[in-house]
Length: 194
Image (tube, rainbow, N blue to C red; front, side, top):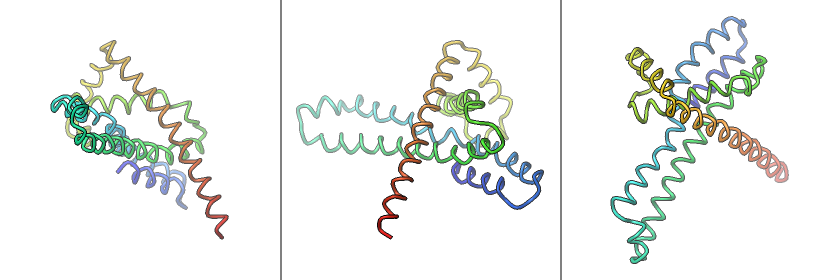
């Protein structure tokens, strides 16, 4: 959903209409996009289920004695790696069009990255720990706001949220670079075949 909303914002920003209408459309879509964006990188937190399974079933320890458990261990590891990878790829794909819109408006990413990635990190925390859902800013704004303020007022938790936000920014930049490089490689490969 956040990827589709990001491209919808890009379409709105580039449509042949008045500047006011384009801005209004982007501003209308942006909060919905931002509410759903943490769901992408939230998939990184699913490793806790993998670790629980390993611990609960002693899968790793048992695999040292029973080699038939290597395949289930490998499958589970591969599943969670792909699951997290997919989440981070959608995370990057959902930000790229918005970054381009902001850059055209004279706002390079470094000018808004710290509060933006901190908000996304806070969104992951609110979903993971406080169990809020993406649509609840509409239905439970008061409790959501209180939980957000409480999280940032808690010194240790606030720093952790900021650190995870920094990790998300670094991850985004790395994935953005990788996507550009993969696109360039694809263009070279397809140009040779023509």
